[in-house]
Amino acid sequence: MSVPVPKVSFLVPLFNHVQQTQEMLVSLLASLPQGLHFELIFADDASTDGTRDWLSTLSDPRIQIALNESNLGYANTNNVAAALATGHYLALLNNDLVFAPGWLEPMLDALEAPGLNAGIVGNLQYRVLDGGLDHAGVVLTPRGQFDHVRKEPAFGEQAREVYVTTGACMLMRRADFEAVGGFDDVFVNGCEDIDLCLKIRAGGKKIYVAQTSKILHHVSLSRSRASLQNEKNSHYLYGKWRKEIKLQLTKNWVGWLAAPASNYAEYLDGVLEDSFKSKPHIAAMAIAEAAILREEARWQRELGLASSGHTWMNQVQVTGVKEVPQRRMFLAEEEVSLSLDHIKTARNFYVCARLLDDFDPESIAIELSVNGAQKKTCRLTEGRVINVGIIDPLIFPGSKNHLKAAVYFIDAKGVALRPAPNAMLISHFVIDDEVVRPS
Image 1: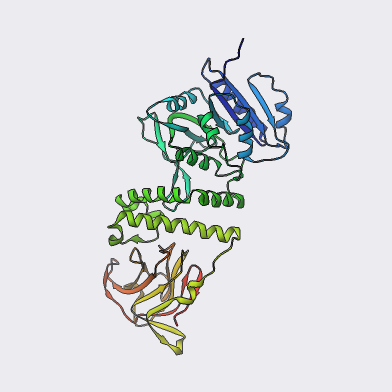
Image 2: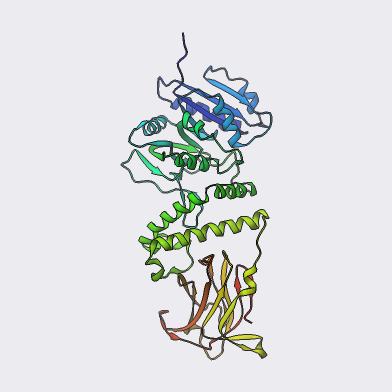
């Protein structure tokens, strides 16, 4: 008599935390629909606690065990488990999940719905610690970084399309997993799931979250996400998918620019100029490129990668100032402008100066602007000391960049009245943490 092929192969990579694994297994078996034909594959990644001793006690014929001789990481360990799988579907599960009846059926329904063209289906995941929502999909933030959606979705849809979903709990066809080569084992405990989703998307299928599938998760219990290795993972991910990530981020920004500025205000220092926003597709593309370049520069610093250096520092042109030799400072005229070539990105743009004694600090504001795209109005908060700036200014690589500072008289409500020339003495500027002095 032939043994029926399992409908679902549950793949569970293990690395320590035997108690959570035991609790996960109990809740998983109790949660599955009656009559489901399945197999469960535990792949142990060289655990150092009592995990292997416990695995040796399991006698359920539906459970297979794979033991890595050394620690291979999340991607490799899942690939080991997938190579043993015979089910039509693969359910990738972390060993720190807690299940209740009803979580699997909505995911299966979404994956099998012919109109959805689903390649991967995730679900809603709530923290065991406090019950808060930790995952309803993964999105690109306005800064160009991946982050979990932690806002309760609107009710009504059984499945909602998302950009990508976490590998902590995802369902897909085994054939699709094999067609894209499984997990990319260059990743080590981070970003493998995003890469897998992007590979599935590149093949023409979509990613969903089944909104009525809900589980609990001991978030990141077994693998640390805050590490230098995770920065390496992110660097590799963006290098591999830069074009796709920029395209998606551009699409996102087109939508954000059409919405109230409050929707993205927390991600932007200052405001965007109306003239810049009047061409939303061009603006969105420029913002997306700036965000990715900023991340790439950060990885260069943190990972010690080769850098082209600050060649732009030797070509900064400053206009709108008059030297005051006896003070070793520069008097700002009506508007001070800095022109820069060959700069790709910058962490900041600061003006360091002092307000002259003839002016009342409470009646003065300084407006900073970057490339006619971004501006910020700064009130003086430290008396006559001026140290105002823009964090993450919108630098445009491949063209001349213009950073400007202008001093204005303001009324009691902070509204600009008229220019206030010759009001401040500038000692220096700071651009990307580098000191720049007028010459």
